[in-house]
Image (cartoon, rainbow, N blue to C red; front, side):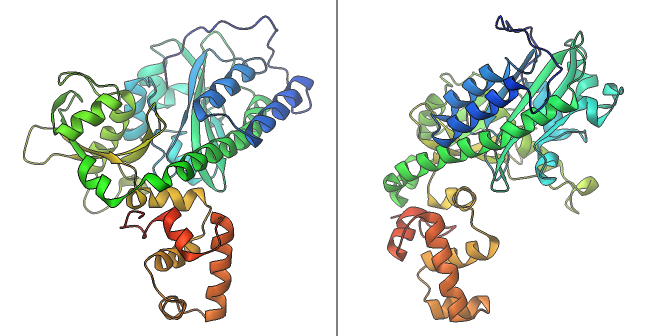
Length: 382
């Protein structure tokens, strides 16, 4: 969600007159599919996708990033534009990422949502028009019914709106992008699962307090450790943009009426699992600090463990709602008979579900399942 800037284009001429059968589009789709089959690290993959996409579809600026499938908040540190984040979280606007995700849509543009009426978008009228922006495209990289990454691509006011053919091209590759990001994250989770332990959570959890402008007011020793890992080095430094997105979500939740969400919009949790340079995942949660400075926020930071990773693990392995219920009971140590009684299923049906879960997770026994997923939503792996 960076501000539109004129990018330097490769020598190849870029034209909006494309279709899914254009030789450049076919080559792009084949290349992205090949990369997604054996993807490099997520950031390297996304940068390569953007580089190749620019040869086919023209845009002046924007960014791709990895997303937490539970909350759609970023899983990496990116230089987001803060005004854009404010509109994304607070405004009742068109093409919000969470709304596209609820609708299971991959791509939408301002021009298609509001033909000839961009100014009806609060974000466009309040931010991008001032910055010289034109049309805007939102992209969700979806796989298995979940969103694993997103992009916002912009055109300056001197360029026409994105066409339906261009939307179709990017929608087509977005599915492979989603597969690649999910595969890379699963690879990271499997690699690190043996290092998780309940003790590490107690020893390394940290707390950070930030003021209404997201400047750090104070932190515990372990909170300071995580700040350094996230690139914040002094107590008066502003939080990184990715963390500010999480604090914005916490403030929006705090303003939501106790009677329920306005306009039917339910805000997602103010938390994400962010990947630091070493590849380690850090769980970050934010809550508004009551009875103190107006707008101050408390952030909890800790290594991602089975407890905090549970929603992500369920999404990564593609477990259905019923399979998730059953798996939680399995790793808690319940017997097959107890599970059947608790879920009002036959023992035969439970055994079939267990086989399906084992196949999805890639293991063959309950001890392996517990080692991979932990002891359930409230227990870390041993």
